Image (cartoon, rainbow, N blue to C red; front, side):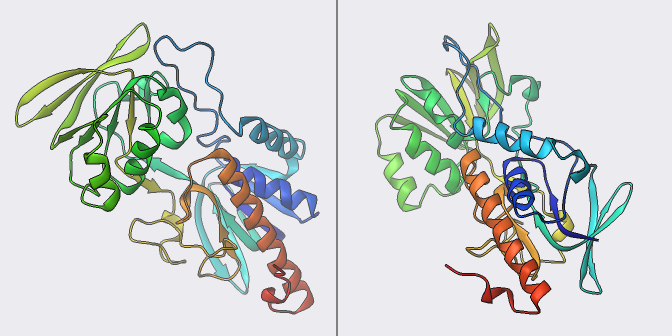
Length: 311
């Protein structure tokens, strides 16, 4: 039996594992792959040099720390989790592991456009995180696809940098919100309501135009980058009957990253506290590990974990 099992190999999971190793907990990190969305760079037309990702160096440092403890790593897909006799059982494809506490840092997947050859354009001007790549839009004409609250927040950031933004709105989404109304009035934003993206065109390995359609009519629009935010799908399936989730399926956590199930903590993009930044995920992972450590110490001492949660 272990003290702590961490599920997920992205920035939040690696930060949690590093914290746990520092406290000498008996910790195991379980994941099918490492990195999450960290390191997913963009290369736009006329871009000089590779994109710098804030927090990437910190992520690499965490990876080296955890990789130095190979016996603490279990590579595999988690297929189930349950609680029995006060212990959490984490089932992988090859084994079942037991622990006093669990941190879930399994991330989320973007909703794709569903256009031909979409995946081969990713990283060449097509991206799914405005928060990560907005700095590349400086002085460029870009498109944003989607009207989720997160997409509009991203447009608010892009409008500080880009020369022009095409806001493609397949659905009304949050356009009638206070932010949506303000963005509608900005002369640098061209709103295309009811349009969908049919195709992305590239030239010399970088996006240079998109084709959009509405009621059978097709328009070709020159752009230098396309940011898509049609919503995220959290990787929380294993917990749907176990902890409280919000309407979109994100794990609801408190300020200490505790879920509704004592002993289960969560961090990163899978939670309701989503931030979509490497540094934010690292901080959340460390906070979740600190809270898990308090929980484990309290169990050892026969106390309520709140007794150790000094703020």
